[in-house]
Length: 483
Ligand code: GDG
Image (cartoon, rainbow, N blue to C red; front, top):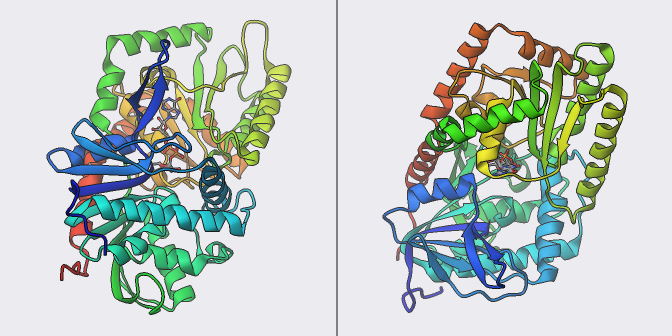
């Protein structure tokens, strides 16, 4: 057991792949840490306030041993990763093995033993770091697929802790998960937690089935009971609770930002610079093959070709935020999307009126809010997505009750935003019909849908999510072993 008493320890510890800060270099060459915007940071802020809290994660700079530092009352504990570990643990095992495997094998996952070895090693380092900073009996909240072995590794070091894990992405059916050569180790790694949170009920059910079939675990209601092998970390009888706790956004902050005069003015400017079309269709995604951007462009291309839509009355504004550019599947996707956009514009743009405005950039949140306000229809068409926060941010931005949302059935958000125009992005005919329906619905019905969705996101915001998660963790069946 690691004794934590010699150094400063914390009652609440978050572990995530990344720390909530980015290092920026100013013009004069000085470096500083800047808060990285994101839903997780906001959610954790709301539960860290008033507690002795620490965050364990990679600082985003390879090979550098950054000393722990305080930020807004939270102690940030960097975990050092070498450039090779970033390639093998992060780009390799996390993004080329687990990410495609957990998203319905949209591209083939790659199974490499060297990547797995690095994943184990880095997970062990995270577990050791948390074990050192957590106070006796502390609550530890571990995030996401990059850290699935940390729960049992940490329990081995510190049985006194209350350990939770939350999966931001889907958990696949056992028929796909079973491909993973190290599947049993991953399940055992997770079963070191007291509570496992998932985005959807189906994800929790998939996990339970994997435990039954691959480990011979017993499940009853929302509890998995399992007796570990003696020589494995996390051995002994354990009862682990699992449930769907769908993540959300900070509704009030997004809503208030979208109401500011600057954002409203900017939304009008955006429409004007597009030539004030009758209908602005919008897509905003990380450039990721899970987001269904190619399917969306295929539907749009056919709609222009069929005469369902035409410039200058209708245009698609597609923002694709650069992502994982060192992974080959992402480079390939980028060139496919470039090609599709080029063809659509070549075939259907007219002088002064582009069919598709394609922007491969990221934008400040004020600009995102203005884009949401400027759009008549937001197209969210993932082939698989844990939740999809963009859909919820759109709804929260539409304080005017305007706008329509086309939303893929394969997102976690579809289970909550039932008034959206739901679609199956694989069914191009159906997708085209759904987009036409969303464009042509009368204003009163649209407004009714939007107000219903706003109510849902307002009452189920990110603060409610964090509270719900922590209450479930506290109520987990096994009591920590505090000697
Ligand atoms: C994973 C899961 C799950 C995007 N471009 C810009 C920008 N963004 C922001 C969006 C939104 C976030 O990034 C993206 O969140 P999503 O949920 O849409 O998707 P993933 O990145 O795949 O997130 C997902 C999520 O984790 C949370 O659990 O919902 O299913 O895959 O907040 O607004 N923000 C700014 N500029 C951009 O250009 N400022």
